[in-house]
Amino acid sequence: MNLRTPALLLVTLATFGVLWLASRGGGSVPGAGAPAGQPLFGSSPLAVRVERGAEATVFRREGGYWSQVSPVWFPLSEAAGREITRTLAGAVTQQIYAPGEGPTPREASLDPPRAVVEVVDDSGVTRVALGESMPGGRSFAQVEESEDARLRGRLITLPDGLHTFVYARRDAGWFDPRVPLPPLGAVVEMALRGEGERASVTLLRDRDRWRLADDGAPVRPGVIETMRELTDGLYARELLEGGAATARPAVFGLSQPAAAWDLIEEGGRRTTLLLGRTAGVGDDSVFARLERREGSATLRSPILRLPPTVSALAGGRATIADDRVFTAEAAEVTSLRLEPPAGGPSPVLFERDAEGRFVAVGGAAADTQPTAVLEALLSLRGERRLRPPERLYHDGTSEAAIASPGDADDLPRGYAGAVTLAHGVSGRSATLLVRRWGNWVIRVPDDAERAEYVLDEASEAVLERVIAPLLRGAAEPPGR
Image 1 (cartoon, rainbow, N blue to C red):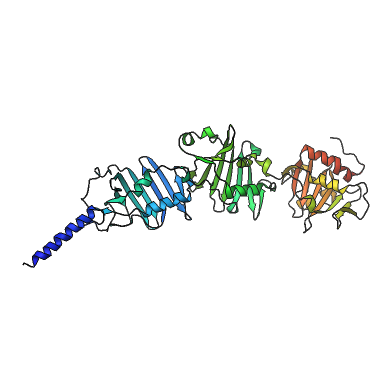
Image 2 (image 1 turned 180 degrees about the vertical axis):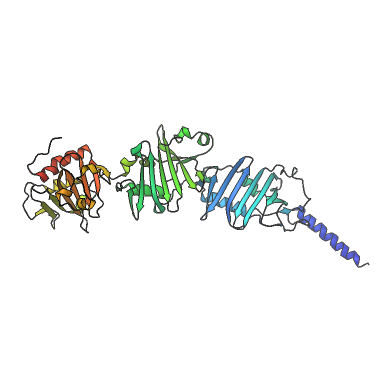
């Protein structure tokens, strides 16, 4: 036998074997350059874009968690994240056609493609056009872009997993119901915006304390705790997508929101919770939408149906600012001093004894009830202003003089005395400078953060009924 005959037979059998494997999806045809069974995407996907006609859906992975960022933005559930990761890992080439071989683009339903999937991972970008699903659990695809030059531009077949993912209908478990507000510890500035000037307020964080930006007023007790509960664990009762939820936000009161809560992180990223109307008809939910500013882009959530606890954000300054003139608690006060102006009654000092009762020090004050005086002082409420108008002072008044009352020429006009409370273990104190007429006082804490308070009517009445008589003795206040 001619020795060439077995060699020719072996070549023929090998050729038929390759073609047979290729027809079964288990190999590559000659000239394909890349073996079948090749993963189409990298092992660390960062973003996925799915295009179906004019519609595009974008997913992004950050810190191991997936979120949808377009057409609406919201975190995905852990199950949805696992589905994306599993689908991308399962996109492995079954068959790779050499250039010019295989069905035409029209025969493979790729002219035009039924969908396009683009994946960004740590190695680059892979873009794949998908055709129709075929019998046998596979579909044709065209690799339009890939970091692997052997796959770029090739017609391939893939398992149906990617095709199924693109066309799957999402149920309520697709999104994570937790509202993605930034943790309060990462926030350095907050703004609450409502209807009307007094409904808007900005808060700034100074280490562990929050204060109002315009006048430095402290925040009402419990407000920051409520905000922290919202940022740590606010869950949507329902996410509304499509239809009126997308096209007509006015239906939910969100074209002109009743209130907005801005949270600004140290790096400048801004997240805004917009509050619309309540659901009504036995439903106390509040419709809302979340927005996040990232560079020049604004991400928007679906319409959210939130629990009524978010309504606490709609009260503006009235529910945020602590309008107490003295912010100490009664049990914290260790001493109380009444100091009339020069020529008035003698100063009176009360200190707590070992049993917690106030006793007079350095002189009898039988007609003074320190507990009633303390309750009156702690009940004072007013609008806080950092810089009182100069018309309330004599010429040449200095902040240092007001912080240390002593010289009557350097005190506010109509000065009628001072009340000092010491409180806390450290003995911190705050002094109230009282005017002889009107509803105006100045509080001077020991850190010299001077503040004016224009008292409300109830507080003015308390001041005139309880405090002023003790400071002026038998003198009557001048007529108004």
